[in-house]
Amino acid sequence: MSELILTRNFHLPGSHTLALYRETGGYAGLEKAFAMKPAEITEEVKKSNLRGLGGAGFPTGVKWGFLPKGHPGPIYLVINADEGEPGTFKDRYLLERDPHALIEGMIISAYAIGAHLGFVYIRGEYVGPWRIFRRAVEEAYQAGFLGKNILGSGFDLDIIIHRGAGAYICGEETGLISSLEGKKGWPKLKPPFPAIRGAFGAPTIVNNVETICHVPHIVRRGAAWFAGLGTKTQGGTRMYSVSGHVARPGVYELPVSVTLRSLIDEHAGGLPNRRRLKAVVPGGSSAAILTAGEIDVTMDVDGLKNAGTMAGSAGVIVMDETVSIPDALMVVARFYAHESCGQCTPCRESTGWIYKMTRRIIEGKGRKEDLDTILDVARRGAGTTICAFFDGAVGPYISYIEKFRAEFEALIPK
Amino acid sequence: MSALGAVSVQFTREQLAEVRRLQALYPDKRAALLPVLHLAQEAFGHISLEAEEYAAGLFDLSPAHVHEVVTFYSLFFREPRGRHVISVCHNLTCHLLGAQRVLTHLKKRLGVDVGGTTPDGGVTLLSVECLCACEMAPMMQVNDRYEGNLTPEKVDRILAELR
Ligand SMILES: Cc1cc2nc3c(=O)[nH]c(=O)nc-3n(C[C@H](O)[C@H](O)[C@H](O)COP(=O)(O)O)c2cc1C
Ligand code: SF4
Image (cartoon, helix red, strand yellow):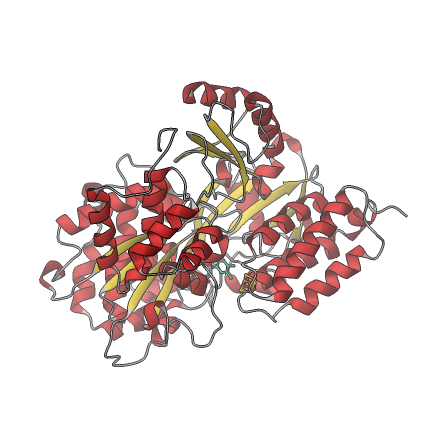
C-alpha cells in the first residue's frame, strides 16, 4: 500500500475535529509557512508539480504566478467545493472527514497569494458537509488559526462559506464567481482570467478543495517529496472516486501513476457477479469513455490525455457487460441538456437536440442519419463556446458513439 | 420548513438582523442575495413572486433581477412543496444500479408523479441530477440527509420514519 496523505485520518472517529487534527500533526505546517516568503511558497508549489484536481489539471503554482505583482487592492482565494461532476464524491469526504485540512491549506495558500479573504463555495445539496465545515471554521477562529494576526504572524485571514443553490455550471470557475456575486451562475468569457479580474472585479485564485488540501503537506515535506510521488509531469497522490459495477465502490487515494486496471481490479475489488468489464468513464462524466481493452493507462493528467480522454475530476464509473451504452449516453445527454446555462447557442441547442435524439434511438424510433448528425453537431460546436461545459459534453457524445457504434445501429430501425 | 396555511412574506426582527449581517459580510452587498434567498425559503417555505419582490426591496434590486436568480437555481422552490422533499438521483451510476426501480417504487408508494406532492402535503418527489454520492448508489436526498444503497425495503423504512 502506498502512503495515504489526504485520507490518512478518514478512518479515525472525530477526524473532523480540531483536537484530532492537531494530534495528528495538523496546523504544524503553518509555522514553517509563515517563516517563508510568500513567493517561496508559490515556487515550492510550482516545483511540486501539483496540478489542479477540480477538472482542468492546470499547474497550481503557475496559476498563482499569474496574479498581478504588487496589486494595490484586495486579492481573493475562492475554494471550489461545488462538486457536481457526475461520478465524483471526493470533496464531500474531505469536507466531512478532514475540514481542518482545507482550512490549513487555505491559510497557507492565502498567505502565498496575498489574500486576506477566502470563500468556500459549497454546493447547496451538501447540507451535512456544510454544517461540519462551518463548525470547523468556528473552531479555527476560536483557536486563533483564523482572523487577525494568525499565530502572531501578522497575517490576517477571514473565511466566508457560501452555499450554492443547485446548478452544475456553478462548478465552472467563472460561473462560480457569478454565483458568488449574487447572480445567476453564468460563466464569463476568458480572458480576462480570474487571476487578473475575478470575484468582485479583483484578482482571484479559484482552486478545488483537494488541490488546496495538498498544500500544507507540500510545505511541510517539500516539493521534491511531493513530485516524487507521481509522474514526471504531475506530483502527488489524488483521490479517485470509484463507482458503478465494482465490488468496493468508494474513495481511493493513490499516486497518480496508478493504472486504471489496478484501480478497478486491485483496489476496488474488481467486478461483482463474475461479470466482464465493458467500459469505464475515467474522469467524471465529461471524460471520453474507455473500452475494456483500453484500461492499461496511468491515471495522471497526461496519461489519460494521451489515451484520448481526461483525468478530469477522477470520478471513475465502471460498467459491466450488461450495460447498454446507448442507454448510458441518453442519461448523460439528459444531464448536459438540463445543466446547460443557455448562454451560447451551440451549447443550448445541441445539448437539447442530442438528448432528444439519443432518447428516440433507445425508444426504437431513431433515424439512420441520427448518429452522424450527433457527431457532426458535437464536432462543430466543440471549442466555440464561452466555457468548457460544452466540450465536456462532446467527450461522451463522440466517444460513446464512435466506440460502440454497432450497439447504437442495432437500435435504429432499418 | 413552514407550517401549512397563509404565510406573510416578512422577516422577523432577528431574520432582518441576519440579512444585514450577511449584506455587510461580503465585499459587495449583492453577494448576500443567495444566502438571503436560502433564508427566505427557510422562513416562508418557498419563494413566491411576493417573496422575490420583498427580497428585491432589501437589496435595492429590481424584482426582475431577483426573479432571474431564483429561476436559475434548482434548489429554490417557487411553489409550495411538501413538508419533506425526496430527490432521487437519476444520473449515470445511480441509473446503472437501479435508480429507476427506486423511483417507480416511490411513485407507487406515494401515489404521485415526479414533481408531485402527496395530497396531505407530506412529501414532494423529485428526480435530480448527480448528488455526488455515487459510492452509495442508488441514492436519494431526503430533506437535508443523503440515503444510499437503497432497496424497496429501505425506502419503505425511510418513508415510515417520515410520517
Ligand atoms: C462545466 C464545468 C464544471 C466544473 N465543475 C467543477 C467542480 O464541481 N469542482 C471543481 O473543483 N472544479 C470544477 N470545474 C473546474 C473549474 O472551472 C476550475 O478549473 C477549478 O475549480 C480550478 O481549481 P483547480 O485548479 O484546483 O482544479 C468545472 C469546470 C467546468 C467547465
Ligand atoms: S458553453 Fe454552455 S454552459 Fe458554458 S457558458 Fe455556454 S451555454 Fe453556458
